[in-house]
Each structure stands twice: as structure tokens, then as C-alpha cells.
Image (tube, rainbow, N blue to C red):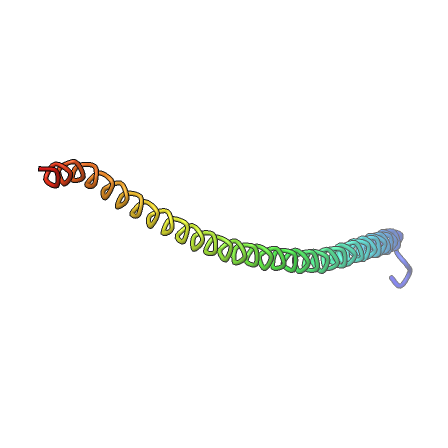
Length: 127
């Protein structure tokens, strides 16, 4: 009974082969996971670099936008100053025009009155 059994030897060989096969499969799975982990790590590095580049781009765009807004504000303030100056000049011009109109109308009125009263005054003076 202490003699090795052929069936027992065969099943032990099958077990050893199965264990070696599982060991190879595990090694391949570990290698696959390692390759995938390296790929994932490289992808994460690229994503991080992309985010840094995107942040830098956003910062540059923010600076450009701020500069444009400052320029637009300066332009608006300069335009408003010019407009206020233009409106003040225009108001002065209209004031002068209105004063001229007043004097022209007064002059016309005086001339009309004199045209009407001069003949009457002459008639009265000659009678």
C-alpha cells in the first residue's frame, strides 16, 4: 500500500500542471494589469498636462479680456468727454443763434413799427 499509485501520480501531475497553468495565467494577468496601470498613469499625466495648459490658456485669455475691457472703458470715457464737450459747444452755439434771432426779430419789429408810425407822424407834423 505504500507503493505509489499510478492514478495518484497521474492526478498529482494534473494538479501540478493546473497549478503551473494558473501560475502562468496569474503572471499574464499581473503583466496585463501592470501594462494597463502604466497606460492609465501616462493618460493621467497627459490629462494633468492638458489641464495645466488649459489653465494657462484661460489665464492668458483673461488677461487679454481684461486689457480689452480697460481699453474699451478708456475709449468710452474719452468718447463721453468728447460728447460732453460737443454738447456744450452746441449749447453755446444755439444760445448765440437764439440771441441773434431775438435781435433780428426785435429789429424787424422796430422797423415794422417805424414803417407804420413814420407816415402817421409825418401826416400829423404836416397838418
